[in-house]
Image (cartoon, rainbow, N blue to C red; front, side):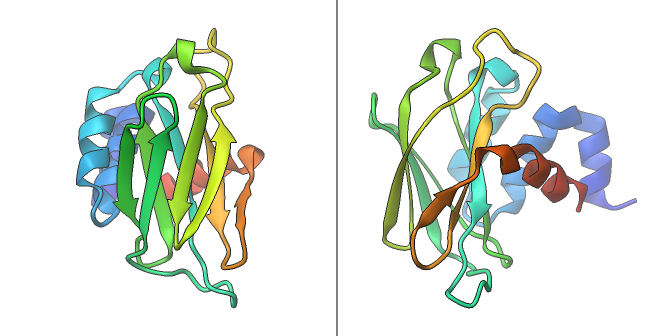
Length: 151
């Protein structure tokens, strides 16, 4: 069993998010947020890929998630596959809040969509930076997170 799988089993999904954050280079700020926010009702995760025009992942690209309401920014960078994962501290009252995600000179404004009464389902979205423009795929969030944690 790999160290990543052992950590995922030992910590559960909340701990796995923190463990995954530690694996993304330059994710020190994210790790502090993920450790502190172990309950689903206190976090919102944005993940995705930064790729070039030929769909190849771009390593080491800085990525930032910023809350428009507070200006608080969460920063990280892509791993060797171009994958990034950023976790913001959002509470139940933050449903509908506007967030900006930036990478590679591109910015997308998105809305934090989740059911404030649901404290069991992971909250988040997927945003890919494809070289042309960012693309949000909210339905792809959960499968992407599961696939990443299963590696």
